[in-house]
Image: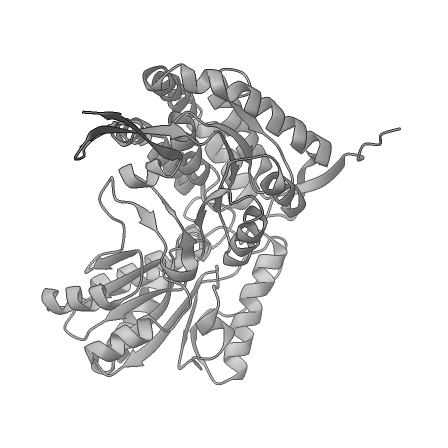
Length: 461
């Protein structure tokens, strides 16, 4: 007699209140297998229908997402705490890029014609088959779309597991998209890490994952059993280098905005700031002045710029890093005290004079903490300090000498670097993490190609 696993539930909690929004049913191992089987059965017809039909359906899916922007934004705020205006911009911003992504995918799929000594070769791009998409909670609509759209547009079917912290966001996003898609091309399941692990181990051809470095490494180990294709967008400990001749006000704006936005819960947050000695005092003043304006509170309140951290566990990690730094002599310039009352709030916090070996200097913080350190102004020292991390997601450099800024940017081992601006690149650029910040990459024509297999077909001349 066969037995099946009993379905389990997990609470979907409002981080602003600590109250349960809903109890969510987690997929059983059998249901993971069934979801994979359904999507795999649907994939051949989806691939066969051709790019133009797929693109048209995905455009319509994008229109449905944009039409539901207010509903989705409210879900984002309730489930992970993001201020409502930021949540609306997330849905609008990522939803409106879908036509551009589809145009890039069209270019990625154009066959390449090659000539050899005795043959003609045509290189075509074929879908891999079935993609497991496992996405995080910090951008509950944006991050899934970064994987779902190119994976589906290139002819793959997808089994999608959103983070257990934002299950209703993921479920609603899948529902909206499925209104425009054939049955079972996109199958959505719920669950925590055990369900994600079961999905990675299942009969899938590729895993697209956005999340922590440790989970990314576990996915690589599991996927190695069958050499499954991977795209892993992982964490960062991004530096910001500020030379004394820079526009200090602009550099301070970059530091504060990109250390505190989304309550610091961004993989490419500014996490390590190095300021040339002669500019340190003025830069500290500017940063503290600007950071004071970042009021925290419920994302549904007017004037709030930072919502809560996503969970009690996440807040405890931030508190532990700050308290360790204080015990080891760090100077607290702002914040650093845990608010009383419900919800997992933490204030904008500024620290300086840090021990470089502490967790706050070495590990991803993922919270609203700004750390300031000094350097001599030497270019080589700036590069050394920026690279003193296992991560390599992004970096930022501010200098009054643009050529020096570009030299330093070239020396930093990171996938995306901004000079005299935040690191956001022009549309079409790939998003790629160096070293332990990722494996493979997404975005741009080359990123979309990773959801395909290049196949060479040759004939004699």
